[in-house]
Image (cartoon, helix red, strand yellow):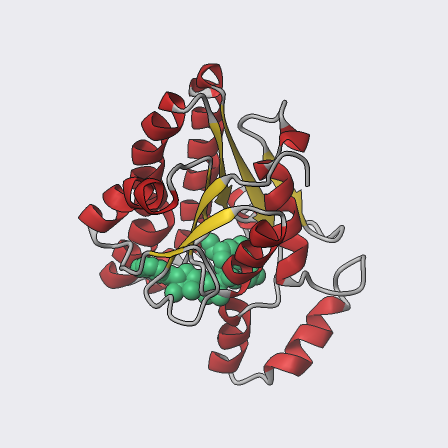
Length: 244
Ligand SMILES: NC(=O)c1ccc[n+]([C@@H]2O[C@H](COP(=O)([O-])OP(=O)(O)OC[C@H]3O[C@@H](n4cnc5c(N)ncnc54)[C@H](O)[C@@H]3O)[C@@H](O)[C@H]2O)c1
């Protein structure tokens, strides 16, 4: 990918399905990557920054820590996320706090800290992993959809507000992706994940749900100069399957 060699990136949720693919692809493009997650042992990376994004000081400090470990910061990928299921009437206070904390407050804190660091260096790219459900809400996941809509809106606002500093903020909005998040959801509801993933694939016009690499490739594009005129875009990656 164009002009990525030697760039420095921070990726949150790096131990998860999509996060691991983003780390692999950025590194394959020559990017030095700092990985953040609760447990980052065993991940091939250039810096390891383990911690809990619900810890405010950790989230606030991640961009500076990445900058110091890598000797720069050009790309930030806010990928960590949690999914809570159910209607509002089924949502507990703990679900609310967890979802808002990981999906909205942490990206807010990371972006707020990263933007001045990037501005001082002449610019950068931030990519938030939202969801197609943040753009078109789906059933029975009210708080999850709301958090993804919040991060989508924040992306659009930051995309406008920081373009003049040469900081491009965009979001990728996947539909279903074959990751632990999706598979554990099936298992919890008593379905065999492999069978459920195959069945779900039949509902997608392209014939399969996304693999993490399908999403990571778009993240790498948004990190690169190939997307140099994109600011505040919400890029849906859905194999032709609209929410419905
Ligand atoms: N899988 C899908 O179908 C799908 C669809 C649309 C959007 N997304 C979004 O993609 C992103 C990645 O999801 P995934 O499917 O790879 O899920 P995943 O569960 O495999 O990975 C999520 C990662 O986030 C980390 N994380 C969660 N809470 C954390 C915390 N408090 N502190 C630090 N790290 C924390 C987890 O440890 C995990 O490694 C999420 O933002 C998710 O909402 C996923």
